[in-house]
Image (cartoon, rainbow, N blue to C red; front, side, top):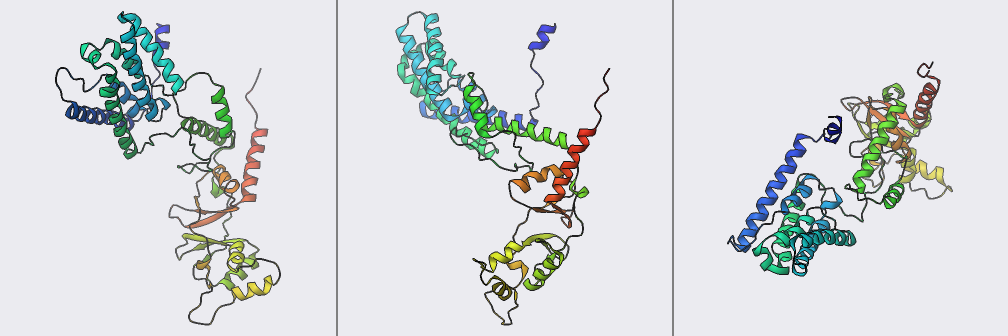
Length: 391
């Protein structure tokens, strides 16, 4: 009983919507392939217009479209090559059983050599040997009709359907997703390993893995981030942010904004509207860049000219903060764990991150020194925390 229990599959966490997506895709795929093939070839008794192994291909194409075994070259190449090998084995080997054995053996070897391994193609090779008089009469044409026809039509449906359903297909094997600091959910991406490390391990791995490299890397990144958050806890930004933030408005004149920033000794000021919602951010670097100061000679005089208000009614010169501010600006909710600010400040080069409330109104600012202090304090707490009692 224990042995049988270990053989049973573990519970899956496939979402009902995802399962419905896969089932509906397979239904539409087989429907389209069957109707179009029947229309092109007819449904006479001596015509094969839909082969059985295409159902197994549909499971991969719509159930796990990210798998390397479900990519277009794997599906089309694997099915066609296996069909040719199956026909050749039937013609060269008289006995059905040896012919079947040779067909599956050679199909796997050929697909591995051509890098188009596709499990349902083993059934295609076997069908070419055991399919009966109608298939045998087709000869090598069986690889074209119905194998190639069915397969290409199914891949076309999978390409359209998966992308409409939000699933990237096909996965280009030689193009990797560039490294990012933050994923689509706004979560930080760890730095415990780089893509080259993963590719080196995969190159040394001698078994076929039914998982795309991008998906494997994403799983590792998620695991790394989860462990990182567990180690450093969930201290929110509201616990470390500065609340006395100096702000300016869109219409604040440049001279007034510059004097305000100098008076408070700050390098950056959020730009807010009348409801204190952040609409941009202005830094000393913005003043320097828009004043067009390529060298230090004459810098002070040129900066004063840039800041000075123009009396003319029309002027091409920047006059107010809104004309030089950076927008949009990255903000975080007050409940955001401080650990999630690490990639923002390290990889994106941000030194200040505005913090907003549920109404997106400015409530504070997290600086690099405050972030480092919070992480340092968190590390010290864990160093001095007593471990479990031991005998």
